[in-house]
Length: 247
Image (cartoon, rainbow, N blue to C red; front, side, top):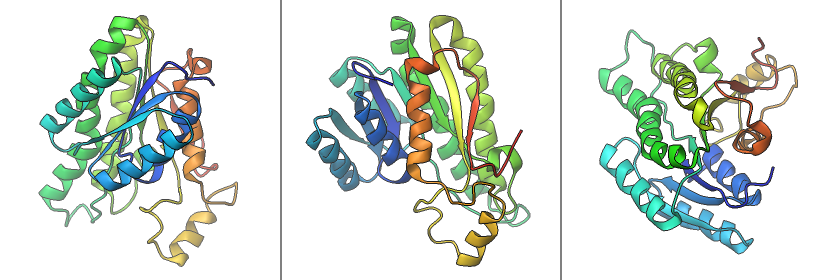
């Protein structure tokens, strides 16, 4: 899965799955533009990539702000000349039962998790269409497939990402651009490490592989979908959940 000569842009890259995806894409030879709100963590990531011989640059960007998205992508394309691979990973949670959920918490999650993916995809589309090659990879969630109590906003945003993925796949497939999603299950990240041991044990009982997933499990799937080996896969949701949800 050699990505030499390709340029990737990863959102939400300062930690967790985004951080892991950036590292894996760089290991495969891609030049990686990393974006998030946390500049020090982005600088650390870029330093790690360049220290091992890779090429990378950071761009401070809040995906909840359309103008910041436009500015960051414009700067990345100006620096690297193109973007071949887009990983829409940035996401937040604002959990609450739907009957008590505040409209602001609904709007912020939908805006960050779903609307930002649409906006970021728009920024790379002309570059991909021009070269007739591209990879759009959206990080959705098992809860976008099966729902989750207390996460109506999060589940809706992730289910929306699946629909967006498929719509884009139909729109641009004839131009050599694929659009796919990766749906992680229970993954050990900063978002899950604060959960109680009881909740983690309950989750483990639902996973046939009997372990919590790692960031690398997800990043490896992303690297595959970004490669030539996945050139005949589009509109697909690749589940990385240890068997927690099948079918």
